[in-house]
Image (cartoon, one colour):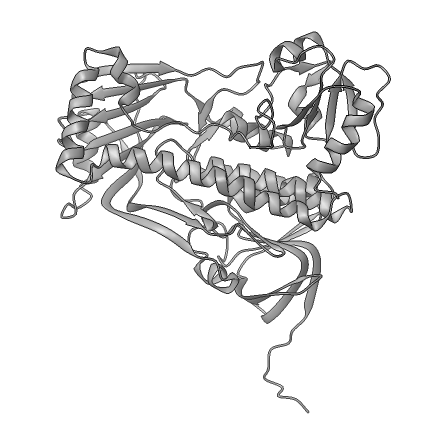
Length: 490
């Protein structure tokens, strides 16, 4: 008889196991469910703890993805802002007004706390039978086989294994053990400078809803402060602080807002990191979000890029699981999203070097740029307080392809809505008909103008609404080959 004290190992078999129940893992599970794929979501935490704003800035593309899985309320509840102002001490250097090309129902940006976003995603998951969530399940090992992944977890009932065809790792920055088990590196750097975040409720009815970035303000001399509006008369404030300084939250808030009543809701200090795994796909395991890449938050490239990771992997996993594409398609997830992460890290790294110059020469250059920007509009582009996140343009071998399509109308619906149902071909050829792998719609004049399509061209769109290919010649001949290429079929 075996040792009766040994843990009972009961395998659970699902198509996909998602490790991490934060926004990226939640989004991945919802996107998979939308395509009929069941998933089991595991998280080491005991339950959701809705504290602190954390990631707050959500770009229109991210809002669009969440809307596609029934969580459009995120855009409705968030604070919309379209103006970003930059100051040097008490003088405004310049401002930019953001617009979104096309006819998008979403603003360029909304601010809403990560805690609220997670709650709204939780509600959608609770109403989705294809998703099961298990809290208090700590992953302690991952073993890969030719046809499955075996995830070992410790939960309330002891040790258990979860067998899945594929796994998605979205366990955030602290997924150290999982990365180690997969054998991936997480190289990069950690910046020594400290920053303080505060969530403050303060009634300022005359203050416009806009992002404000302050270089060298009198209430934080020699450093910078970023202020974002949030719902319910709250503001998110980021200060750069010195190593020897305590939070001094109340004093700092009074310096920003003056002698008005306010309520301190949450505060924390942190340091920025810039890191990237060497592989975002390891066999049957895909890494996404902060589990794969960490970057400074200026420009809001962290959560927004993680949600883009989720959409990229979800349609590809669904195609593989449905037998529509071979396993080789998943390699394009690593290729595309790893390049996107490298670009984001380069952008945020440049911002950090401008905000926190590494040496005297860099500091002098920054001061020269800021002073010049007071009178020379040509210098405004040199002032780097965060290059705002935009959807990445993939290199798909065609200079006119790879970008997210404009959000224009196609008949009674939005073009992106059609595209997200599966591969979509837009053509003027009346003889081209839909098939099992691709839907065909007529190219309307409005869509052609938005795309810059030429007569007799056929445009193939991916299920993440990015352009896959621009075809010329007889589409009946060119389209099947293009579909095979998109799906990595031989």
